[in-house]
Length: 119
Image 1 (tube, rainbow, N blue to C red):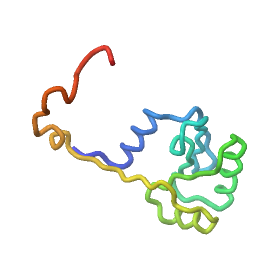
Image 2: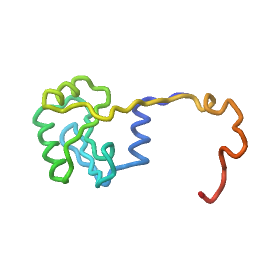
Image 3: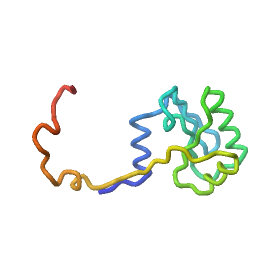
């Protein structure tokens, strides 16, 4: 089984979540508190206006963050950001495969440990 991009984004959000979220129209603002770009990046859900982008920029600055947006395949939103002077930075490639493709060969001894409690 492979995962959809939406499920990968949801898992990422659940395992490395922002301190706080707020919404401005279709835009989700994340307060990352220094946790990195992804956890601080705003995302959109649907069409967004230039006024909403401007409001999101203000909201991010009010949090002490540099405005940064995560584009999740939306070419129209990407074009809107480019028109505002944004440039692509740190592109991410998502990979997904069936677990059986990663476990089809035995591992050599002393390569992997299964222990409890964590080391």
